[in-house]
Amino acid sequence: MKASASMLVMALLSLGSGCARSDWIQQTLVTVDVTGTWQATEGSFFELKLKQQGSKVKGSLAALGFVGSGQGRISGDIDGNLAGDVFRFDPPTPPAANASRCGA
Image (cartoon, helix red, strand yellow):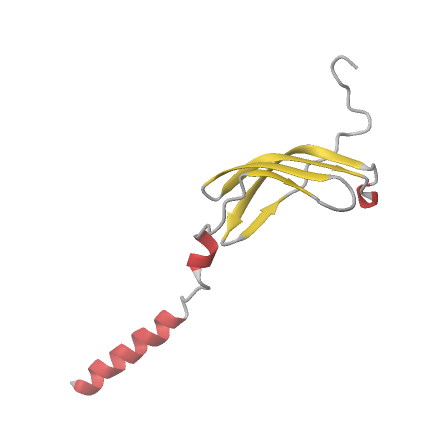
């Protein structure tokens, strides 16, 4: 009886370990508040204006003089999220060259 009970425990432990994930707390815990205006202090102009609610972040990005952008200026709304103390967002999509503008 003891042998079968210990074998059952060992089987459950070996099956349970296959379902283990990375530390989910680090993925869901928000340890920082990024609300506010963030600006570069040297080099090209770069500014983020952010508002955080939980792990969701919304705001705007403005940058001037970045050669890699192909246009020298990037601006627009951004949506991002926080996981632990890491903030991730996608840069705004530049407007299409042939897009029409109201009042232009």
